[in-house]
Image (tube, rainbow, N blue to C red; front, side):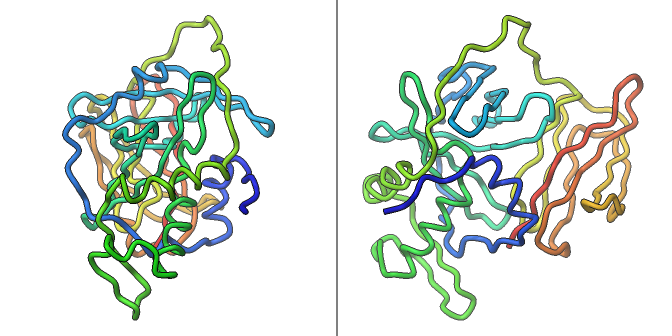
Length: 267
């Protein structure tokens, strides 16, 4: 039986510091015809409280892409950028990767609480172990024992028991009232960064164009990459970077403070 895990958001930040490996299993990309709008389900501002911590989150549904973007209030750190689908009382969050594959992790949303949000790395690591043990043989589309990798076909019906059991090991966050202050909206000061974790590239997206200087920094402040852009999106190459945690800093717009986001590079 698994023990209850620590805050998934804390674990996500620690991955780069401890140099964790990436899940060996991924899913084939698959079409999601009617993505769920989690902003409508959760609200645009969410406060989650557990026995360990309190999270202040901003939830935004992108109509043009169908994805839900979840950021941490006050930091603009992107915790999730994914499509959501629902099957048998669980929500499955599909995070696209750069190689045509994707991660899928489950979330249980009930009237007063939520489990599993932004725990894609841990759930995919556990699924990878199950696949190595020979579980879900009918879902394995490709397997390479030399580089310890496998690609699965996603089937919510066959995977439901695994994900449902998996969620029981994560802490329960209850929904709490959000302060009466006006909810901040996504502005040029609130960019999104995805995929995060990233393997080969990461895309930085602003809600409006404008001349900016973008820097990729190590945790010690060393500038590893610097460029200027006037577009509202920028793709950063990270394939040559060692696994770890980095900082993306954007600056240059008049009357706006520099913005920093955390980026995790994994393999």
